[in-house]
Image 1: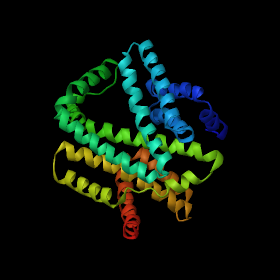
Image 2: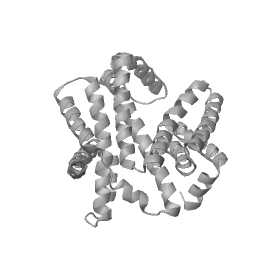
Image 3: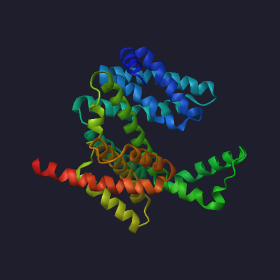
Amino acid sequence: MSRTFSSWIADNPGAAVFVTALFGLLPLFGFGFAFFLPGAVPALVALVRGPRSGVIVAGGASGLLALAMLVMGRPIPVGLIYSLWVLGPPLLLAALLRRSESLTLCLQVAVLGGAVLVLLLHATLGDPERFWAPFVRDLAQEMERRGLPLDLAEDGLVETLARTLWGWVTMLTVLLAMCALFLARWWQCRPVMPGRFGAEFRQLRIGIALGVASAVAVAASLLSDRPLIDDLARLFLGALTIVGLAAAHRLKAEGRLHSAMLWAVYALLLLAAPLMVAVLAGWGFVDNWMRSRPAAQNA
């Protein structure tokens, strides 16, 4: 996106409503990578014009998305829930960023919020496998009706997916919210403060307390077989992966990592996700620990 586009969106909340709704429709038509785009627009408006303007943009876009869902034959509440999911978290984080000027604090709050959400889901809705199994089976049948060669029952994936969906949904919510916030911050800084977002991103960390909690959760998930622990470990791994990417960008900015290597990191993250998530999360944990200890000692 150009400087002109981001400035135009920030200066025209009415246009931002329609752009948000348009971006929100992209994932519904197969552009799954675009899930973070709609949340970035009201987040940008909140950063530039204030949280109230961001809420107005998000509210208007939610109404348009609900109407679009109705036209596509889906209930209006589905559109409102979808809008709340993709627009709410980035907007809240943008309000926090505008007040604190700290991407690190936003990441920490997002991780804490995700952990609380996981705990609440497990406490209120009980066994995730029992809750999600009917939905997963319906999804599998729908995919088979559309001609997709996937037998979840035979492969034993119904139980696996159902058991882990709370964690995946929560981790995806946190990652999408942070990606939307990153894009909004980049849009905000590019016209007037070029380079500021990059400097802020390269300093991301989750701090000692969350770093220790992540180590405990990951170790416990390897030693036990409890869905709650596994879901928390997934959330922390996602956060540490972001910190690992920030560390890679910092090395590149310092001239200690070639641009081609950074591109290779992203390519491998797409092509060999499980391996690269483990590598980046481990890197992020070490980097977070080394940079958080001096900060804690100076505090």
